Amino acid sequence: MLVGGQGRRLRPLTDTRPKPMMQLVDRPFVAHQIDLLRRHGVDDVIFSCGYRPDALRDHFGDGAAAGVRLRYVVDPEPLGTAGAVRNAEDLLDDAPFLVLNGDILTDLDLTAFAAEHRATGAQGTIALTPVDDPSAFGLVRLHDDGTVEAFVEKPTPADLRPGEPYRINAGTYLLDPAVLDLIPRGVSCSIEREVFPVLAERGTLHGHPSDAYWRDIGTPASYLAANHDVLAGALRTESPTGGAYLGAGAHVDPSATVDDRSCLGDGAVLAAGASVRGSVVGAGARIGVDVTLDGAIVGAGATVGRGARLGPGVIVGDDARIAPGTVVDPSTPVPTGAGA
Image 1 (cartoon, rainbow, N blue to C red):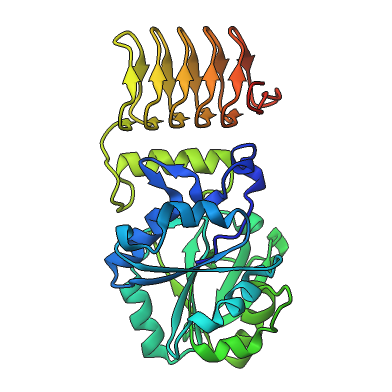
Image 2 (image 1 turned 135 degrees about the horizontal axis):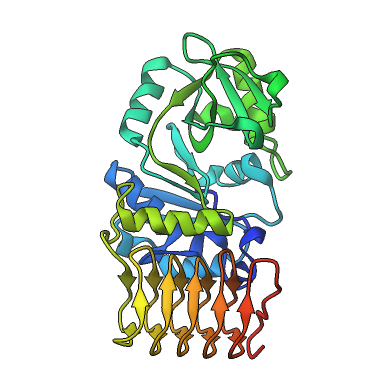
């Protein structure tokens, strides 16, 4: 599992935690991926780490509490998606292995995925998800036999074929050990740009189209949408569904309101008259009297002063202090340091 990214688009929250440790309803995001693996019989997991690996180790330890064996490898420097896989080679055995991007929320049927890989005899199988507009992604084209024909990076209208399905890389792969020989040791290398095209040219890369739930959580809007989707039961997870999530010890004043698309972390406090809509409030955060949060993300331990209004896309960092009466929209900088 590739969990080394910094998650710059989710700053300032990722200044204090790696992106895979962003809370998604009642658990860190990457715990949802572990749950998915375990449900499909995968109980030996390697975290390929880079940025803030201790946060992952401190939370998950050896993985026993999550029902898996969990080991760690830390890239000495950024090695790219392929280089990070090669850096974990000593922990792999001589069998096909899954690779998961550490920022993708999905309920992909991994059992069917693995069965298709075995049946085709491919060296690599890549999960594909449909999109309406592939222009921001890399379009993946398949031959009639399911092998990958081509990768089209961020296609323009001129690159598209009438009536073709728009499928993109879904960030889940199953690879045979022989693929490691295509990856140089100790240097940065992209599995998507440098390894997969070689396999496609050889005819040994298979595409697995799937309509399973899929979301990249790397932007504030997508991260919030992922929380909303989990709460609504839009995909299978181990998290509670059917309404707002209130963590252990969270307190909501009787005159405050929390809609069913919101999450409050452990020990969070909502004062009288506060209104929280479609927002995520971190553990121990204090939301003051008559505060309105509408599509906002508030970090752990932060305080939002009386009467403040934080609109869609606003991110408040861990331990930040938002002054009473502050009105913030996404174009307005928010103080994010402790004591700010």
